[in-house]
Length: 132
Image 1 (tube, rainbow, N blue to C red):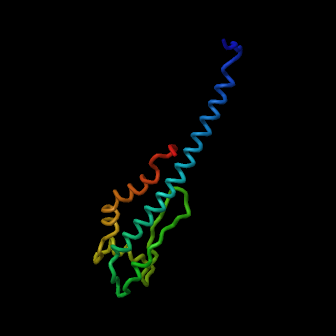
Image 2 (cartoon, rainbow, N blue to C red):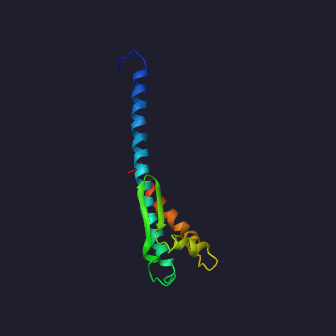
C-alpha cells in the first residue's frame, strides 16, 4: 500500500497553471504565425487576381497600371494591396477606374468574387493549430 502524503495541492495547482499557460502561449504564437502566413498567401492571391482584372489599356499607357500592383507585408496580421500608378495630376489611376465617370470598375467586383477563396486560403493555414 502506498504511503499517504500530507500537504497541500497548491504546488501541484501552481505547476498545472504554469504548464497550461506555456501550452496556451505556444498555441497563440503558432496561431499568429499561421495567420501571417495565410495573409501572405491570400494577399499574393488577391494581387494576382487584381492584376489579371486590371484593364490593359488605361489612358494610352498599356500595361502600366496592371504592373503597378504591390503588397505591403510590413505589419503583423495586416496586409495592404496598393496600385502605385498615378496620372499626370497625381491621382491614382485605379481610383479613376473604380470611381470616375468614365471608369471601368473592377476592384470591388474582383475582391467580392474572390472573397471566399481568400478566406479559405487563410483558414487553410490556421486549421488544426495546436494539434501538430
